[in-house]
Amino acid sequence: MFHMNADMGDPEWEKVGISEYRERIRRLMDSMKSCGLDIAVIPAGANFQYLAGYSYISMERLTVLIIKDGGCTLLVPGLMEDQVRENTWISDIVSWKDTENPYEAFRRLTDIGRNQKIGLDGSLTYSHYSRMFSPEEFTRTGIINDMISEFREIKSEKEMYLIGQAIRRSEKALEETIGSIGEGVSEQDIARQLEWNFIDAGLSGPAFSSIVAFGENCAKPHHEPGKRKLKHGDSIIIDFGGSYGGYSSDTTRTFAYGEPGGDFRNAYEAVAEAQILAMEAVSQQSKYKDLDLAARKLLREKGYGEMEIRLGHGLGIEVHEPPFLTTDNSGKVREGTVFTVEPGVYRYGKYGIRIEDTTFVKNGKCTSFNRLGKDYSLQKL
Image (tube, rainbow, N blue to C red; front, side, top):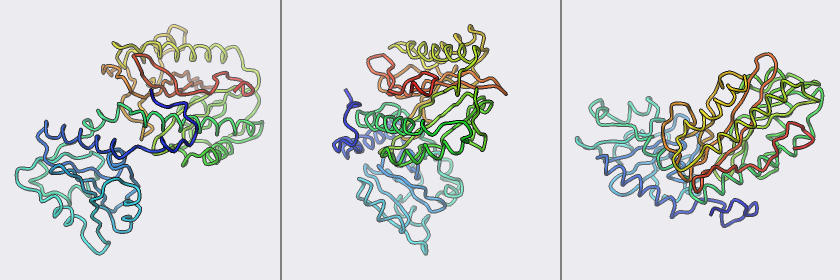
């Protein structure tokens, strides 16, 4: 059982251990061998972080993890070498200076031969790709994102702990923000206050730009906070998440400012019921599409038409990652997966309602990480 209830800041659980990173590399090497791949090349990003334990925005400078001949090497810009060495478990690090050609360094390290097959992370930009490989080598490259996603979908105990911490701390930040919500405050005001409170709660920062929407803006699922000011009778959607130990959280709560009308109350109850129904649809035989279809069917029967967006998405290093809870995902729900369950009703020009929890699957059951209440009253949070 993972230590979801461990105290905040338990040093024993603050980061993924070296043995776990080594096991990830070993599993990838085994999969590469079974697919006949000789080399894997992974640029800075989520998969790089999953395997190397650290990543950063490399911009135009080439940064890659190279897996070859049973070992792994990091090729990094010289100006980032110190930070990389401080944060990765990988000891074989080769740096290049701005006065050097990084693509020549890459080819020296890989010593690419005529018959080698190359697996690439698809996030590698074409501007890098076209200078790393010759046209003849293009035909021997393939994308390995699905291979790595297969591993990333199943979370370890340490990953579960870090996700749980990200959720607990972001919920604490929202609780600290609620007191700032009042008539005349703007969406931007609340978004800024919430993200400031993330830092006070011990998060490294927001996992994504917080969504704060009032009234008619709540009908836009990914609304960007603006100058719209809160007034009596508005619905409020706050979709928020923070980063902790390299892992993300994602939660949404909907509120009413003042006493809502019957249409809002009925829709809120339907969305809450749809979320419970979707989570209860998880079993050892269920498929991801079964969850989406269960929520979708209930809302349709309640008179709210078709749910306009998918039910949810996987979460971990990235806020959105596999598995995706869509009507066409026939994949079987896997033990140890983490995903959001976020049904919604959107009435354009009027209001919107979304209730989102991040959940995990254990022993064939779906359980929420979240502890935050789900009443639409601000006073009952």
